[in-house]
Image (cartoon, rainbow, N blue to C red; front, side, top):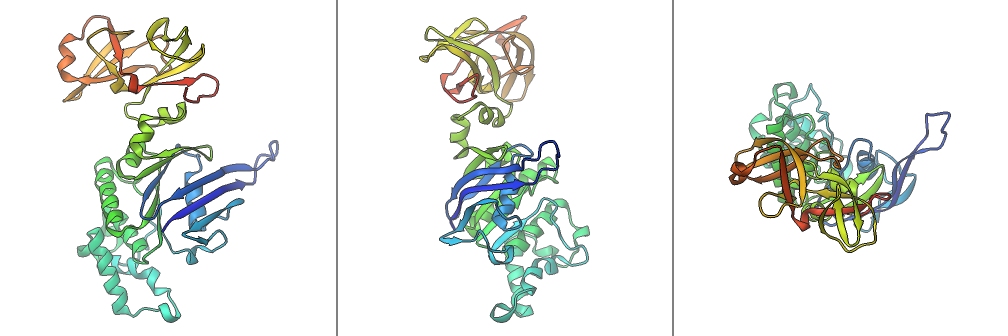
Length: 361
């Protein structure tokens, strides 16, 4: 099912009497999601991603704009008529019902021609239970399940309705690190098995990049950039996107373009053909190299061994971050010493942004 959002806007009444203007949670948001894609809405808390999901589900009515499922305009449809499956952050399982009863609950509300027999409901529940691998848990109650198992029950309950669109609102936030990794792999497997168009809301960029076909980066209700995860990582359109994606975070320096050269702290680090101006220079940790002719001098703090790689931690007067981090091969550890270190730069990992607008140059 293709999903299209056209100029979607959601305003909430202001509670501040001194500033009575409405609060815009989502601003003129336009997005097209292809049939069968898993798209992640990614951004910090308060960026409007969950509001966008609630607009898609019908739990909120938009202030402006339209929502289409395929060719159908569903903007005014109530949630129960949209054919969506929604999985919340807190699972929202019924504690007094068994896993089987939780899964079949949405089916019991069908009436008329859509009404199902108990046998049909149990067969459908068993089918989705096999898909999410909880067949042996069907007679347990939620209190007898782990967090990851409860999450699978919530996903099974959403899938049993055969939804046109699956909506996941930060479904992994309550899980520990190892279980988050395992469950996100399961979500990807399930989505590929079913082919259901899925929208996944998260603030975790690693989570979004690892399982989604496309990521949509949001800030203050505005779509900043969308594309395949690696493409967005490799070509951020502005400084916000560059800083939001990547672990360890990208290194940001105050710099300038002067006479066709890019300068950081007075050192010419690379040629750059653009008008002279003040800029912010962002360099991925893997974009700083050791050996050869280093062009950027930093004060060495320490070296952190990470197995196959090492992290060289340094400082620089022009750095916007407290520390500068470089990820290099462990074979270079023997050549690191003294109080300073010189880095070379990989041009493909260096991004230059206008100081005033934050836009990529």
